[in-house]
Length: 128
Image (cartoon, rainbow, N blue to C red; front, side):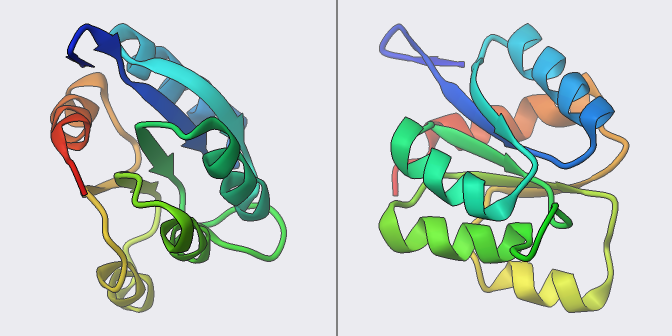
């Protein structure tokens, strides 16, 4: 949750409005600060660079051309921010693509407050 008294910041990348609201609620309830939200991979790359969040929650299927895995690849070319994938999809193709990125956890929707607690705690302690 906190490191040296500083509240950890989280960027939510999720194209489903209800899921985004739920994530916001869970993340805040667990003691983290949501610093931004987007539904698009391209915007996620820009927000990650601008906001420099401590953690990113990333959906795989997003609006427009860039999916979440590609967005993480672009973000990690600039800076290594811990990523928690949260997706409704577990197909082999995307599982293989995810393995080629640095990530903390891969959660399948629907998520709960408890299923998000440990990945956030783990991500908050990572120093890449």
